Length: 118
Ligand SMILES: [Cu+2]
Image (cartoon, rainbow, N blue to C red; front, top):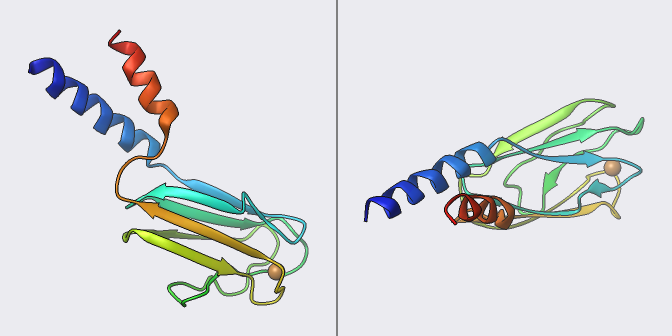
């Protein structure tokens, strides 16, 4: 029993460590990576590396970064689960999605924790 409590605590700690930030680059008129999956409560940051002005604008207007000039970024926390498609206001070909899940999504960190207890 104790062992499971500890394991759960370790997993939570791991989740917190992984909470940091998901970074999406806006580069060459594209969102990179185009589709991301984050856990509820996590931050996502878009950074525009192009000379051209871009935006990160939710298709359902959940968020709108406004104009992002080169090297400017926009950051928001995703507190609700769901599937959020977004686009750039100025370039119709620029599309991306954020999927927000209830539980942790990084299988690699789970694998690492499990390895500690082997
Ligand atoms: Cu754009």
